[in-house]
Image 1 (cartoon, helix red, strand yellow):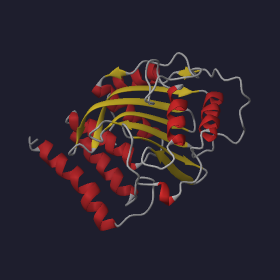
Image 2: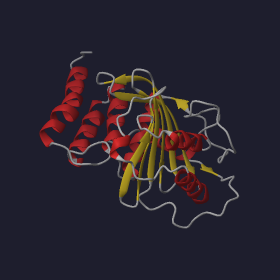
Image 3: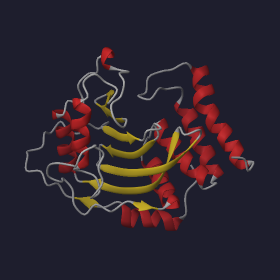
Image 4: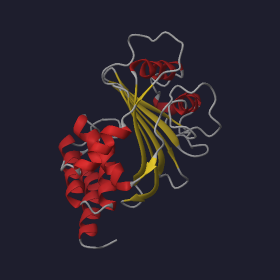
Length: 265
């Protein structure tokens, strides 16, 4: 993916990636986090568009994001407000242990899926030990999801929450940078994540959305190419029909890019 400006990257490295301390007094479990650990917690508005997102990787890299608009017919959020920071190893272990106690990593039964949602839509997707899964408000047992959102609240920038109610319990982090509303800085932050590690198609779509808003068409096209290189996969990495994937996943992205390049809506 084409590099962003040196100034933006220096700003990202010097001011956004900060080390935060753990407030937990529990003894960390050595098995957490596994090398492939990752979570993505999201809340959506009434229109179904994601407006808050929290990602954490195994090395403690944490990304909190907010969106107030979308592209591609409302399907992809434009995360213009971003905070990037790094949890120290003990804090990351504590997060994993608390999510485990919240039953986030328990197997999901097929009959639990696709239930009517209650309140604003929210979900927590996870990857660990070669497996993946998710909890959401569209499940019969919504307890793991609600507990997981309250767990995540303790690791967010101050005054931010994912759960519906007020965050309870002890904050697990301090000195976390406040989110900044800066679309070009958000693109630099996302591009740096792509350079540092393997990311999924969802993250690349979000890079595409920001680049499209900024009319950085080369970056937007590169994001589509990266998604295509990953191949046809569902939301949690499961294989899907290649023809349908090209039509319904890649097709709208390419059409939106062509419309933007031509000056269309």
